[in-house]
Structure formats: structure tokens, C-alpha cells
Image (tube, rainbow, N blue to C red; front, side):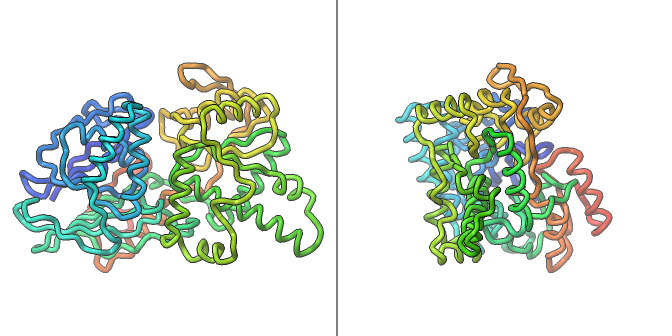
Length: 467
């Protein structure tokens, strides 16, 4: 079995990989949007998301998780005529219609009838599968029989890596999807890799090791307290699924600890009282708010620590200092109020790479204000406004937003340890866990430097072929 890559082979967005089961049959693994400067190499890019490859052999779509760069082109796939089953975990099936509806509104249409028709068709094709349960694929999918299994990836709720195995030969291909880090709030750690004859491994952070995740909450607390001294708004661009919920979880914990310390000692810490007792956290993203609500309804998938907090009658994703903005008119009022007042608060909004969404309006209004601070907690792809702000902001440069030049006078921070992707060591640990050595590895979903660095480490440690 070999693989044709239609996206995220030489980049990190537009994930789309076609596994050839035989000469006439294939499976598609993910079908994501391109962002920034990344392209398929065959015509698709961030402005042209149409399917640019032949889908006549594709028997089914397998979805590893529902981040937009892995599923955002599904509407275009349906438009191209794909009518096969869409396999994913149950949690992903629950969240996916929300993501696709948003992708339609951003990239195709706001016509309610068209959106309803696409979502109805999507739900008709969805076939949810339990974690760790083998699903034998229909006999007419290929000349030989195949089965697949989803394993916990620990990246976002419902995320998985997928194993596809030839039933007779037991040859197993594994697509990592996006592997999460250990000690991620709310989520279990990734399930160790059992075995793989051919492993297609993400390499987003193949050249880096993250800062400690164990003390990242303290670093978040310190950065926010430093930013509050500027007496302005703290903007945190974040993906609607995963990163937003992690941030809310840790901000609730910081506020809880500040109050608990005061209750225990009877004395309020002056700085904590000034910052955290009065801190308002604004979640200004209807999509993120919907996902947060869905996260709350699927507590059964949370890890033990998160469930213990619920048992203590805490509400990690719905605390009293959290304000959710729904209506666009309310969003505009908040932006204008913060632009004129500079009141200290934390605003979490999409998109995570500043390519769209309500965060753009905050950035246009507040980047020129030196009281503002922008805090990046996730990967910023080349060619995105987020990468430009990261690069040129500390130099007092500018960024183009909606074809408008915006001078950057705000403070720019990047907080490590918040990536939802495994780092170099964790990727090597994933390979280490196997019962038998992996025979073949192909690195995907990474920029050239990251892939090259990880490939060198793999060859050095395992002597395995990396292509």
C-alpha cells in the first residue's frame, strides 16, 4: 500500500492523504483547508479550495479529528461527488457538523438552505466508530479485505490516530493525524503505538521540544499579571476546538487558587486580588462557545483530573468570571469599548492563526495601542497574519489585515508549552512504544526544517527508512 499526498506533506495545513488499497480502490485520510501560503501543489490553496484530484477510486473518507485544517474541504469533496461513508470517532461525529457549517459560511455560502442540505448529507454519510474497536471495511472496497481502528491521539476531544490493516497479510499502515502532548488538560494521553509496518507521522514540532507543560499555568499567570501592568487588553488568538477549552480550564484554576488562598489565610494577596478577583475573561467566538458547550456535555471523555474538579463542584469551562459574546452587534460594542477604555481583560477569539474570525477586528482596533498585549499560545503557519505579528511585532513593524496596514505597537508574547502537537521527544517516544520496530516511516504535516530534523533523529536512533 502506498500513499498519494494531496496536502500537508510539505506543510502543516490542508491535510489530505490517499491510501491506495489496490490499483482501483483507495481511502482518503482527512480533507482539510489550506491556510496561509501553503498549497496542494496541484492548484488548491487558501483562496481555491476546490478538490483538485481524481476521487473515482476513493471508497471512504477517514477523519482523524475535526480541526479545520483536517476537515475544512469536506464540503468541496461532497460537491465533487463523493458519496461514500465518512468514518470517525463518535465525539468527532458529534462536533464535525459544527465545523463544516462554519467552513461553509466562511468559504462558500451563508444560504441557510444550502448549508442545511450539506449538513444533512454529511450526517447521512457519517459512520461513527468506537475507540479501540476494529471495523472491517465492506468487501467491495478492494480486492482484499481491510479493517481500521481509531486510537486516542490526545490532541482535541475525539482526536485519533488511525490504523488500517490488510486482514490476510496483517500489513498495517498507521496515520498519526495530529498527536497531542502528554499532560494536556481535559484529555487522556495518546494511546501508545502498538505496531506499524508503515507509519505516516506528523512532524509539526519535529525540530523542537516544548517548554515544560507542568508549569505552563504558572507562566500563563505571570504573563497575564505582567500584561495587566500595561492597563490594557490581553488578546489570545486560539482555535475554537481544543486550545480555547484548555485556556478556560487553566484560567479557571488560576482564579480558583487565588480565591482559595484568600479563604485559607484570610488575607488577599494584593497582586492576585488586583488581577484575578476582578479579571473578566471574554470568549468572543460563537463557534468556540458551541464547542465548549459540547465539551461540557461529553465529560465522559475527560481525564481523571478534570473529572475530579467536577466532583468538587467546580465548573472548569463555565466559571463566573467568564463572559461569552454571541451576537455580532455585541461583539462590535465590546471591540469599540475596549478600544476607547483600555480596560484590562482577557479576550479569547478565533482564529488561532489570525486568518479570520472575530480576532481580526480586535487586532485591527487594538494592535496600534501600546496598552494592548497579544499572547500567542499555538503554532503560526508561514504566510499567516499570526506569523507576521510574531515576527514583526517585536520590531515595531506592521501587519496586513483585510488589505489594511496595521501598525503594531502592542506587546507581543509567545507562551511555550501550549502546543496541542507532540514535540520531537514525544514523537520519538511514540515510535519507541511499539512491540516490534517500525519498518517504514514517512514524515508529513511539517515544514521542511522540522521534517529534516526529525528524520535525522529517527535514522540515528532506529536506522529505519524515512521517506
